[in-house]
Amino acid sequence: MTSDKQPRGGGSESPYITATFRIRRFNPEISDEATWQDFRIEIDPKERVLDGLHKIKWDVDGSLTFRRSCAHGICGSDAMRINGKNRLACKALIKDINPEKPITIEPLKALTVLKDLVVDMEPFFQAYRDVMPFLITSGNEPTRERLQSPEDRERFDDTTKCILCAACTSSCPVFWNDGQYFGPAAIVNAHRFIFDSRDEAAEQRLEILNGQDGVWRCRTIFNCTEVCPRGIEITNAIREVKRALITRRV
Image 1 (cartoon, rainbow, N blue to C red):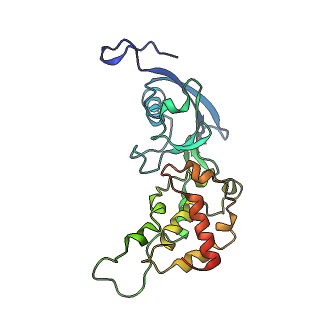
Image 2 (image 1 turned 180 degrees about the vertical axis):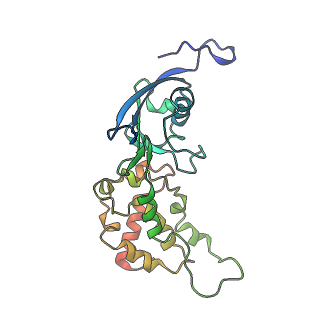
């Protein structure tokens, strides 16, 4: 549907369309039940879903609540379900989501909703902390940087790309059914250090992930890999951790 809004720059045809954002709203101070609310806005289809959310919050309903920070796909804070798929709102273009139909926006699944599109990320970050996502070494502090060959660096290069957006973990059916499962993101961040030639705590992390809530819960459904905004081969990383547990070689 083409809007009646006048074009900018004197063109003969307006670049704007009228899009409907159907947003799942929840405010625990008002009701224990979530509801859906439609917002019709004028927007350039080349803009992002995040831009649409900004228009709604700034111009229509200031109570709409969501997280965002860098708006460039780096911080991961604006992960949400858009038309049933986990995405970053700052990377999802309106034109790529069929704006002729309502664009449904809801919070990530399996994490407690605090308000509107904001979920409680603490369980997610606790799983991340539990896998010890930092370099562990012994001996005296070195007087120069710890050297590493390009080949050794490449071994874990893919899993350094994680931005902790939780898109992968909240897309996992195992995590939906049992929030105690570490989840793909925690395993990915463990992988990043397990296979780092400079680190000395691979065995500790493998033992952590060998428990009942660790890698063996993964059913290789590939949801995590499909939704990762950074293109990480998450399922492959989980497979490599499983193999390391079996062979005890990294």
